[in-house]
Image 1: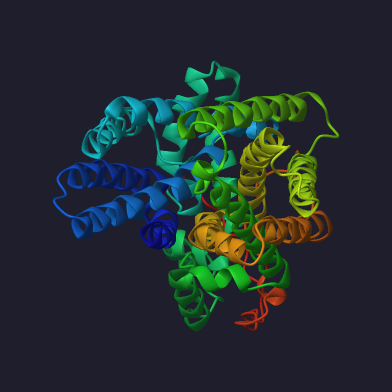
Image 2: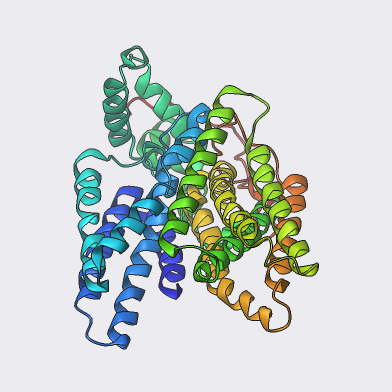
Length: 443
């Protein structure tokens, strides 16, 4: 889990700096190699070390792929696509593979095998995110990939003479005068002799610094800080509930394999239901999906705690098992809602950094989840009381502190400098005589 945590942080920076596709290829290939190394382990130390390598690249893949998907699908379809293409169907498949493997080394080989089609698909069929390319100023590549995507999806009517103008306009909106001057500095100097060279040098110096973002920018404004904290807590508390239950499946009645199958099926059924509801009903938004999942978790945990409090756990043994598996199942839609909201609230220049940050706290929750069950030494239902309390805080924080993002476009630009908590700078003083508007004659 420590490897997953570090991988999420590292690949978030790689993705925002060098692109979504490159980060996905590296993380997927690293996962493939890591599983092969796991299968060759000869003692517990080697096994732990190689599994940490797998965790490092897996954490990176999880952080990057979700952001890539969000940047390439229309806002109307974000929820149901993320609900339909998720990890829930993998749970029954993984349980079957684990049952059929008969040994841990063959289980590792099977996991490595499933990385191969992912690598091939990513290398041959996945293009770089056009949003990232535009943000980096690589307009020609963005035009090429967008044209390819629109041709495949039979939207030829969107490819017209204004296509490059739209890209160029989008690029200019994201950037200040410094980048415009950098694009056409010779034209600017020749046509606007009254613009002093010192001002141009200051602008170009700012341009070189532009686009270099790091994790501290997630706290550069009060709104970004609040978004980061609320989503980080939501991920952490959800992981404590989800993995705390999954790591203790053997304590529930029934087979651990069948319990995994039931959990995966319940998760996927809930995912498809809420994905369909989000697509068909306008009132069903991100908050509804998130809060409805938490309400089911709260009710389930409350019933389980009551059963233990009134010492009815033996009579309601099967009911407790079903309710605990149901609580674990509902965390799937909470994860998805958190991920969608994170991608819709964090601006494009720091979107992968923001998603990696909340994924980091997701893994912190995974690390602490088994520790919570040590509280059973004091009372058998105390871990569920802790989960109930965290779910309550998550519910009210998400509902009261974050805006509804359904139907809204992705945030493309960083907040203006005057809204930032730190790093505020004075604007560049305008020349005594205003220069004529900058005319860009080529893309």
